[in-house]
Image 1 (cartoon, rainbow, N blue to C red):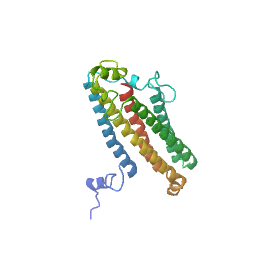
Image 2 (image 1 turned 90 degrees about the vertical axis):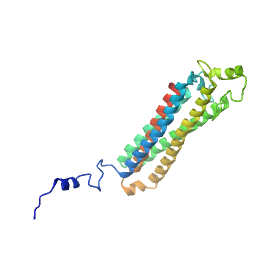
Image 3 (image 1 turned 90 degrees about the horizontal axis):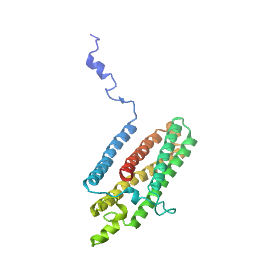
Image 4 (image 1 turned 60 degrees about the vertical axis):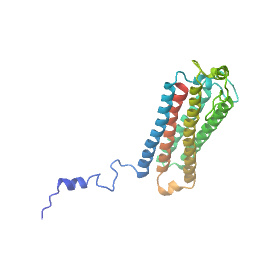
Length: 245
């Protein structure tokens, strides 16, 4: 009987033959990447639509004139300072998540707990700041389907109500589109941050219960870390589109 191995049989013995990941990655981590890619398409669609609406209008709201306040400190004259603080908090929470993942690789339970607590605190602070910003804008007259000129019928009154937020020609439609898209997109992102906080709390509880010690791996911390970094990265694009461009 011939013992020659055909080329086809050699292929079957390779990494693509099944039962082994060709990327040498754990199944859950691959699924997390699939989810993040699909979610990236959703955020991309929102931001592309925002850009299309913005450049389709003859003028658009000036972010420097809308986001001028630091709630509890200054009502105006501080453009983008408060949202800058929010962004810094979220970025620092991403740093603490990196440190939690690194501590997990060393099986250091105490450090994982410490850095996860800081990450959760950073997420809660960001959501709290976003709630304050939303409340302030709502008091100014911005909301879903509304802007400061909603309900006014006189053209001069509409221009007077909206002129503080425009550098160029006042546009009621642009103000309404800005309001709708701002609350929709930042709300969608805030929902993701809230889910991330919940996941971090669950992972922290599992860490305190020695779940990962018994498993011998802190891989779950890394999976949740991927989601948290994605949320932070998305905010960079949201920040750029709404506040800088």
